[in-house]
Amino acid sequence: MTSDVGISVLIVDDHPVVRDGLRGMFESAPGFTVLGEASNGVEALERAAALDPDVILMDLRMPGGGGVDAIAELTRRSARSKVLVLTTYDTDSDTLPAIEAGATGYLLKDAPRDELFTAVRAAAEGRTVLSPAVASRLVSAVRTPRAPGNEPLSAREREVLALVARGTSNREIARELFISEATVKTHLTHLYAKLGVKDRAAAVATAYDRGILG
Image (cartoon, helix red, strand yellow):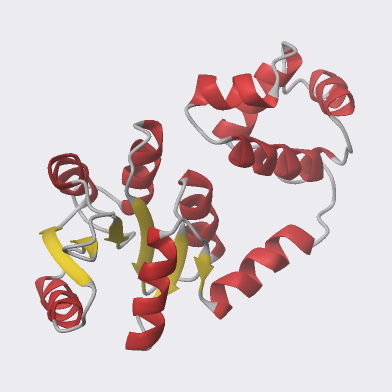
């Protein structure tokens, strides 16, 4: 992190008014420098590669390239920038994929200014920041018991499971799929819950039994 400019920020949002508002807010606060803006995920990847910001403030739903795909690609590239999602949506279908893709934090746009500044500072240090609404949703998603086998595995969970069936370690799976070991463990936790099993061997056996693995 460059001390002479403080924390450098890239703002990604498809609404010019939102970008202007965020730029004004950060430029008026000590310790932050806005390096640039992008209006969609594709542009965000180009700007991130060119500017190398400490933190990227990322909206999720944008025409021309969404935030989750951009976050996943930044993770795949092992980008130095930390991604703080800043969106109006707190549904499970938005929250979980963004976190799994590699976002460092997730805030809603109605967050108070001081909370946003604190979150950006924390993200720059690599600490996870979740708005209370999002945190409670994530806890519920992890804790809610589901009837085993009723929920289909996601494409990524199937990829992880296929590698597990080949005897691949978590570290090797992470390397193969360009994700972190923590994300591999998250996928395993989810697929164990969906299959109603408690370990790798049972997951593989159940998957073959149900025809998920051929």
